[in-house]
Length: 350
Ligand SMILES: Cc1cc2nc3c(=O)[nH]c(=O)nc-3n(C[C@H](O)[C@H](O)[C@H](O)COP(=O)(O)OP(=O)(O)OC[C@H]3O[C@@H](n4cnc5c(N)ncnc54)[C@H](O)[C@@H]3O)c2cc1C
Image: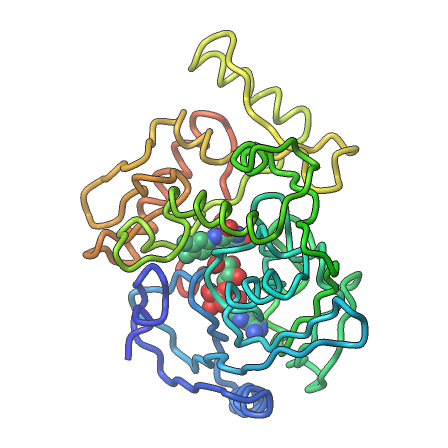
């Protein structure tokens, strides 16, 4: 068994042990048993945010295969087992007239992974609708319901990311009971829908346009499209304060001309604190790495999206990481900005 068969980038060597957990009890028991034996554990969802070393994982991989979606106490309350396929959950909410997840359509992976990095796209993040996350705490061996306020959600992060302490068992969402979407905040999506940012459309329409936009960028897994053999965005958009932004702007003007304006976006609800998000793709392109950039050892930049590093079929994890390092160093040398990886790296470092 190779982990390459379980990751969307189709990379990763063997695991010493592999357990598929189909019920919450099996999941907890598998983790508990491995912990009791001092065995390293890797929780595996859909493998869409994982880069695993060519040497594999020297421990037990526990694949989450729990199922179940239930409507909760309030009208828009939905509790989803960790092993449910995320996009099927979104499709279901849209079909049932629940709004709040429609812009997160087409994202691969499982529901249980969504709180880990506070999955987001096109102006929505799961932190906007998650009300609580049910976890198994490996430190205390307890099952806990953690309310959203205690999840430490931020841009592509949460208290769960990198901590390895909690196994997500299920996620509860509080959604609006309405056929209309939540207000569409993302300018590119609003433009594609022919509305102004802040307006609403039917969720069904928002979902189908999001999927169309994503497909054009190779951001919906499609075995027939080699540009989708990736982990999605390899780098997170850097968050800069005013001083760092001014340095990037000076470097950009020196390199690209005196009228260059570095694009920027507010960081969620932190617009007031002077921090902005700068698109990593913009920096990467201006540092000399365009779409399709291919150093020739099997890993390349997607021909549709600068942020996606693709396994063209013959890549190794080492080649993918070498490409990531080359890009990171190029952006650092050009703009003085350190790009951080978005996927979880197992047995490799950037
Ligand atoms: C084509 C493509 C497009 C993408 N687009 C987006 C996007 O628009 N926005 C976005 O935010 N992400 C995006 N991603 C990244 C990825 O899909 C998400 O991060 C997704 O939530 C990962 O889910 P997964 O089940 O595949 O997790 P995995 O890759 O299996 O695991 C990721 C991490 O979460 C941990 N984990 C998984 N399940 C659990 C659990 N139940 N309990 C505890 N830990 C767990 C794993 O141990 C690992 O550390 C994209 C990826 C691809 C390939």
